[in-house]
Length: 341
Image (cartoon, rainbow, N blue to C red; front, side, top):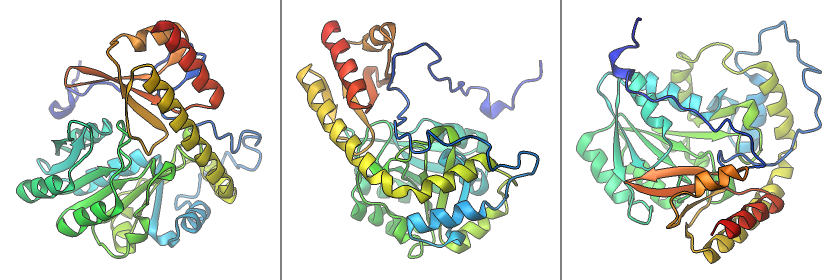
């Protein structure tokens, strides 16, 4: 059998839970239902290739994010855009710097590009030290620095002033600011794209807009940066269905604020309930909670009861990431946990 190239042979497949469930709280999906009543393919010419430039979608995104269409490139989820930047800028053996724990796919993208991901440990409480990040970057001179804010899986939020400090101090590195969860709490840095040549913000409609199935993500940067990356973008990299419904959702973006507010309310209620069950709950600005409990088998026991959460072993300690569900779903989770515990 012909093997994969040597540099990627040790990568592990990214599998998700494919088991029956009553409540799904393991993948940071949200129950927005923004487009749940829209008929599929009604206005799509399925025999025609999609607009490779995603012109209408980019116009709508620009209106929502307060920039110009020429500041935006869209793709198959923001993770697709992160992969594109890493592969476009990193030569073999270049370094990429990020905190750990963070989004696991960063490392896969680096390995596939021949780059090395250097992981800077978060503090014991999963907060991060921007000064340490800057010092490490000045030591190793990474081609790219990735900051996930709020961070996945911990939910930790870095204040905007601290992000700006990193951008200003590390002008010889590209700063990928992964803002997939910023709508749920915190302040975006998209408004800074024309002040800093090295800043690329990543956004998605998968989370606050509740459109994970459409895989609509984008990168936002100054026009010169976007033009440079456009040369390596594959044509037709976002299908017509996703473009059409993504644009439709942006026309109804006014509905998202109320939905995000409800998630924040449910997040705080769920946090208090979990604390009452002796969970250690870490502060979160995302649509999920990162928690720890002295029971190491909660993932398995909840799965048996049809409740899916994410098990996250870190440094030989079992943590759990729990997506914030609807009020009904959160009550089901708590009821099952009360019976187990």
